[in-house]
Image 1 (cartoon, one colour):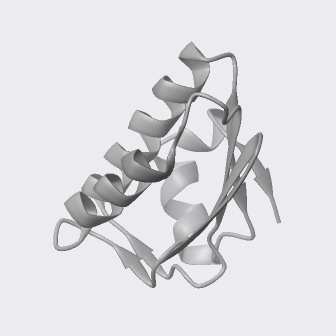
Image 2 (cartoon, rainbow, N blue to C red):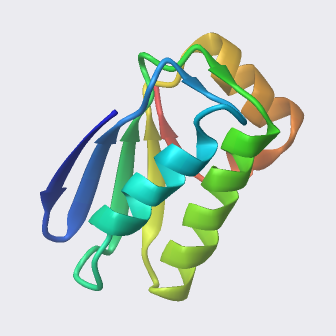
Length: 99
């Protein structure tokens, strides 16, 4: 997972999987990179092929955090498998998704 901090956007290349195995690692990295100057988080998800409930929890956490700042989270190029999970859980309505 790589992070690029540019004000006002935090750009994140997400890992191949976001699961219970690495969720705390992913969340800690996001928390350490986010500053008050960020009003948007762009998650480049083209390499992420699987996301479980722990990964969805991170997305909800980011959504709540950024909404409180009047900001947003964008999901960029999610794989079909990830998009299906987001649609099944109706979480696709929370995020701007760029395909």
